[in-house]
Image (cartoon, rainbow, N blue to C red; front, top):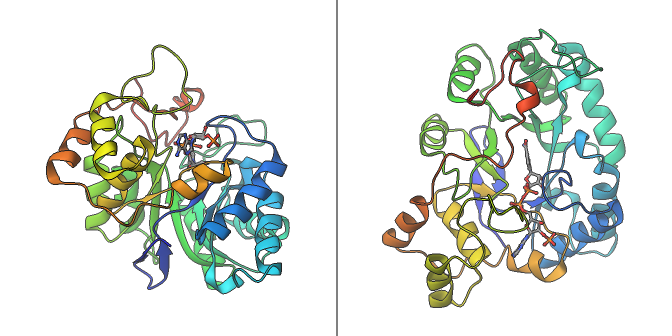
Length: 307
Ligand SMILES: NC(=O)c1ccc[n+]([C@@H]2O[C@H](COP(=O)([O-])OP(=O)(O)OC[C@H]3O[C@@H](n4cnc5c(N)ncnc54)[C@H](OP(=O)(O)O)[C@@H]3O)[C@@H](O)[C@H]2O)c1
């Protein structure tokens, strides 16, 4: 099982989450998501990451119900994260949106509710001018009502984090951002950690697997420098990358719907990388994103570089 990190509100977050988002990597059917959640809980995962926009909260909920029904875990032992989509950013839409997510998940509360993106859109995906500080008030309402034990954000940049912290009653417990060997994000990660905001690392493999384009930057799954480290510890290169993230105090969210790889992706806690090995992986950084959302680049509050 993965160890826990204490969040700034006193709640405990397990250090590895199963990713269930289906649009960013290789697609999976919803039935596969249900099985993946059950297999993950059987393998020792206690943290599952989903989002309203993934369209799979129902199947995630079924996988959770299967695991509880089989007596593997209780609800209290699980940590479930879901996210508010961009077209529900008005303060009075947040709690109803969370209630819809809870209905789909078959749960009475989530452990962590995140603003998925700082960008607000209307239902036709055109830009909406809602300040994320207003959205955050809705998130505070959700916490106050006990519908979310912890609240946080995703894809917020440093300026947005600082503005949120300076202007809110409740500090975000988490910022979920992309971190992997090609996008190491040292400044944003250190900034969040210094503020006591835990960082969840999405797309943790970067371009290691399944991004088949010839143009995809290194490291790939057979990269010699990674293979050398993997062979030393008797692990896969995927495990080396996840361990690298864990050693930076991050919470990686590997997505898999394959039973063996699901097991592999939490088998990270019986070895430790050296400083030199961490540095070898850091050197792959190219500030290239897997998830760049260019379609919102001219919208207010776009969080990434506009190049
Ligand atoms: N907040 C956000 O905006 C945001 C954005 C993107 C993603 N996310 C979250 O982060 C999660 C992960 O990101 P992601 O899905 O983009 O990418 P990822 O987890 O980096 O990569 C997933 C891919 O890696 C393969 N894989 C998994 N374990 C492997 C292993 N041990 N060896 C070789 N291949 C392996 C999977 O295939 P198999 O399934 O066949 O194993 C899948 O194709 C998402 O599911 C979602 O929950 C959040």
